[in-house]
Image 1: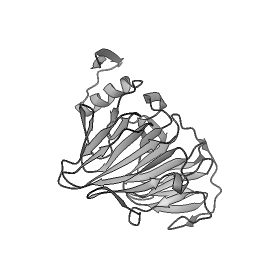
Image 2: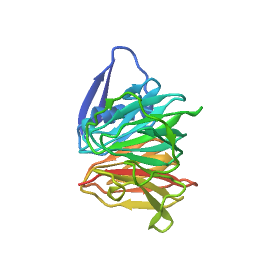
Image 3: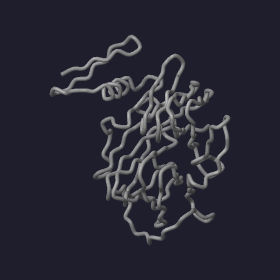
Length: 280
């Protein structure tokens, strides 16, 4: 079976060895990924077919990476079934981890942090860490790297566990709790708080959460670097030039550097939008 998509006046074909049925969301995802090297915005649905199974019960979906045209930025979601884990490992870059849905436990050199929805932790390069879903429900995480091709080295777990509520000055990682984060208004009634940035020790990326109330619109001027936005809850309409994208929970949209956009909340409840960008 062959499926042909048309994008920007060009035809793109994908061959499948067996008959396959596609719904509109899957076709949209396949369409975009087949055109992946264009430096255009790209939408990935939260319920799209997983790109990678990183560990048993752990599915990864890439919102953007070097293979999809992003420069110095990888952002993805990780869906973790109850009782699953990403074993201890390190990266040659830092990593930002936040929770979109459910709860998860982040372990950093044995220090255990229980993360709830919209909590975030930044783990610096070469720092051993693990993530586990110790709950009875699925957890969906949002992860970010300041590189187009993140690498990892898995390690033995030889650490003594110590549960902590917050990070302290003598540790490498930095934790932000949604319940106690310092919020600042970016427009009337629209609040933002940092997940990670240069001031909190992040290198190469910055990101945070914006709460957009019903009927409000957030204009986002163009940045020199690439960025990616994802919806944690609610619905948003993102306008990029003359193109509109409807995002629901766990969808991600890549926006290349030099591109402005705006995010509108058409619903009756507030929408949480996580934004991450590469830094110079």
